[in-house]
Image (cartoon, rainbow, N blue to C red; front, side):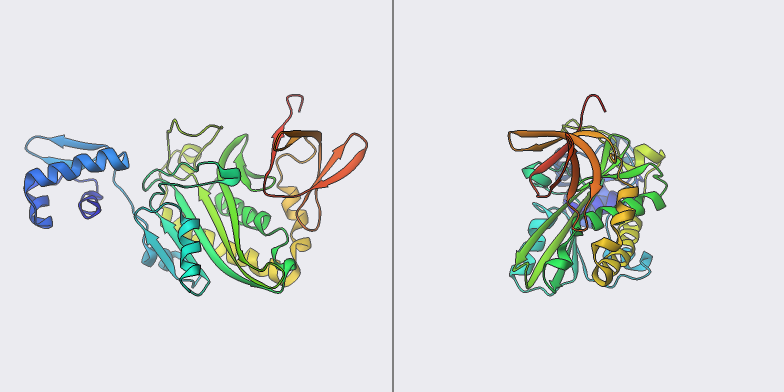
Amino acid sequence: MLTLLKLLKDGRFHSGQALGAALGISRSAVWKQLQQLEIELGLSIHKVRGRGYQLAAPLTLLSAAEISEHSAACAWPVLVFDSIDSTNAQALRSIERGMAPPFLVLAERQTAGRGRRGRKWVSPFAENVYYSLVLRIEGGMRQLEGLSLVVGLAVMRTLQELGISGAGLKWPNDVLVGQKKIAGILLELVGDPADVCHVVLGVGINVNMQMTEEVDQQWTSVRLETGKAFDRNLLVAHLGDMLQAYLIRHQESGFAAIQAEWEQNHLWQGRAVSLIAGVNRIDGVVMGINRQGALRLKVGDVEKVFSGGELSLRLRNDS
């Protein structure tokens, strides 16, 4: 089925006879595969008598070779999947099988994409970037301090370079444009964080998605913000170069060297917020982050510090 899609990706008309000949199947079998493409991948295919079949819009698929060609600095191996449960899950399986990091896992779609706090990450086919970079971390907890915030900063800078000037950060792991989410980060660890471990840097970026009814919060995409479709291979290459630069800074100088830059780009700095931890809610004003990347919140007249993967930050109505 995906071989058929690759024949159609140029956006031109192809006759059923030509497609069948290329695939070694009958025209009726071509028709059945086209129906599957529409149902399973949500693609729109035009069918015109006498002309054949045409994708409603040309499709650019992810390519490890093209990503490498566009990248100035990154040399890690790139694994591209047509469809998997999630790139983070695949990355973790690859670690278990002994694949040596660093390596990058990408997918055209995820059938069970996930964000923080167990939320579903909507993952339509060939529209967005689903990205999991695996690193080996040595040297203990210092190398992990503020790491998810560093990744968020690299994602934000990449989007700004692509013309999304309003992209900013929301503690702990979101990139927003205004109040709309454009990207999210999910880190997962395997091994002993105090000694040697592997970390999966999971990134989801809304690139060419224009509509969906599945997302339960305000969202946007590169295409909605710029008005044009964007080559995801180019975005992945730029993100890799940016990530590598920030990871080197973090490794050499620690998160404290990046802390001020992160705070300057925190969209909710000084804002009145509610911090949600399970059934508990804490109201306060964002003062910034500390040298480990934890949130500094003014609660009443007292400054308190919060960290942890199960926390969620929301603007208060009076902010």
